[in-house]
Amino acid sequence: MKKGVSIIMCVYNGRARLADTLSHLVNQKTTCEVEIVLVDNNSSDNTKSFADNWWRENGNPTIEYKSFFQPVPGKSYAQELGYEKAKYEYLLICDDDNWLCETYVQNAFDIMEKEKKIGALGGWCEAVFENNKPEWFDKYAKYFAVSKQGKESGDITNKKGCLYGAGMIIRKSHWMVLNNLGFKPLLTCRKGDALSSGGDTEYCYALRLLGYRIWYDKRLYFKHWMPKGRMKLSYIQRLRKAMSESNFIVSVYVDELKNREVTQKTFYKRAFRSLKNDFLKQSKKRLKGSFEEKEISKEYFRGLYRLITQYREYSKNRNSIKTWLPQNNTTK
Image 1: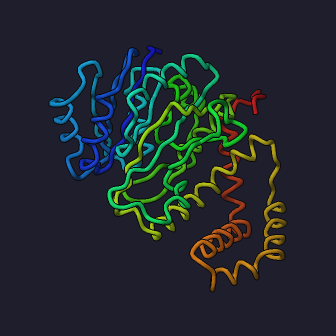
Image 2: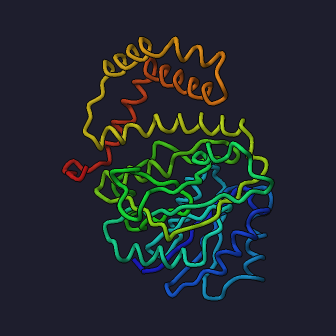
Image 3: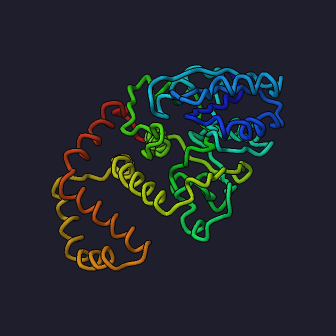
């Protein structure tokens, strides 16, 4: 695979955000080979033509730019097309609201070149607000993927264990290995304005099942744009519900990594213990608690419902992993 960095930008109706994001890519200080692969995920605001024209007028001549249209809704489909069209080994996921620091791309290349065991590499970000920062934001920043992903730079495989997708770097050769094995993600990322997510977490876990490591480096810094339309507690409620659903699905990877046997009896035992210990307390919080207490209570009841009714889905997902995981895999 040719050495260099392919910056994968999957965009849905991102025209209003693209100029700032592309400006930060223009200013990258690099000595490695770099290209931008922009995929318009069925936008209705002429995202692709705007980006093409912007780059033609303002682009960096040392960075190759190419764009594609993916009519199938869903970020995962757009990413797959971007990965396929990328010509370099290192794939850097840059969302349309990520403003990468000027050394981000070169640092990512150098780290991946040095640490051959890395499957996925991530950095950290700070929020930039369209309006004033809400007083509650710091408490809920993690739901917006605004956080440091480790205390120190290095291997976080056995600590956090996964990365958020914004700013993440993976290897195209690993993606090709997974495809050749028949890997089919259980999750699809966000479709349009829907808040389904978790594809980045699932991909990290899939890499871990093949023995690759998850890495964090504090030199990889970017700013994450926070539009005023998302700065609402109701948006956090939607995010938490979507994350709850995806976390249940990817829990099969955690159990597979730990070689943990989980049966329907296990589900029922957990449900009984949950009912016995927490049902009354969580019911009171759901009725009379603070915003946070009510959100925790909602998650409690979501989890209880899954334990009682969704073992069949869990089992199907667990078996799905085994269809592509090499039988002689000993790297868990």
